[in-house]
Amino acid sequence: MNFSEQAAENLRRIQENKPLIHNITNFVVMNYTANVLLAAGASPVMAHAENEVEEMVGFAGALVLNIGTLSDAWLASMITAGKEATRRGTPIVLDPVGSGATRLRTDAAKAILAQTRVRIVRGNASEILSLGDADAQTKGVDSAHGVDQAAAGAADLARSLDTTLAITGPIDLVTDGRRIIRVANGHPLMPFVTGTGCSASTLVGAFAAVDDDPVSAAATALAFFGLAGEKAGAASSGPGSFMIALLDALYLISPDELEAGCRISDES
Image (tube, rainbow, N blue to C red; front, side, top):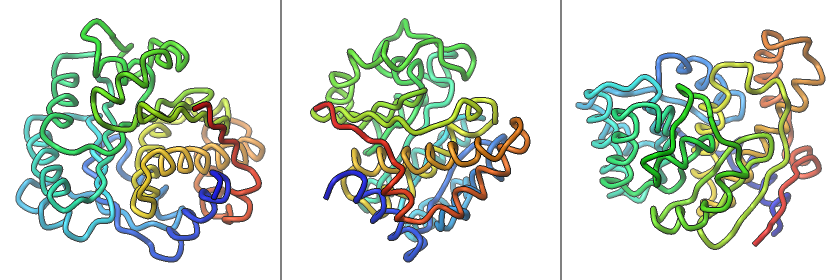
């Protein structure tokens, strides 16, 4: 099965099975990312209290950890949930928002990676680079690097972290250290809506819940999200209308449309 066919099959599985995706995510995006999951056919839960996250993970098809509005208490919950997900074999997606900007964020992302079995890390180029390079910095939560700047060392970093990296930008790059995949779907308005990166991460979680191959799960999720961005962009006049149109597009895209429209290339 090629990537286009796998993308369609993954979306079909999500729509049929409605996997529960447990998010410990940030205040800024919580409502929008929940709606993104609902539009795609998945079921969201936003549970972050440390005394319930282990139990919630037991119901989940995937766990998404997002450090966008980080605190010590939330980090403790993330690690507790991550350890339970690791024990159960539940896929974990880490979004290291702003890693490289402050020591708290960088250390938190590395602690999660060290203490849990993260299957996929989705971030911008600077965030990803910071996980292996102490000198890599971001501009707040925005990338100071392009995807191509991260590409050279991405495979080595994926191997050293023993995970799959999904580096998003105008053309996304996904690698597990052996395979290198590019995803060319997307629209220029996507960076102008807060939460599109976080939404990409939570969709990666939904696709990982139905696809055991983390490279395939990440690449097909990003193609789906990017194709929705293309459809939303064609119907929008600016960021405000785009934000709503994106939810509509995620809801309306069929598996057959995704198979026909996704642009995934294997550079391995």
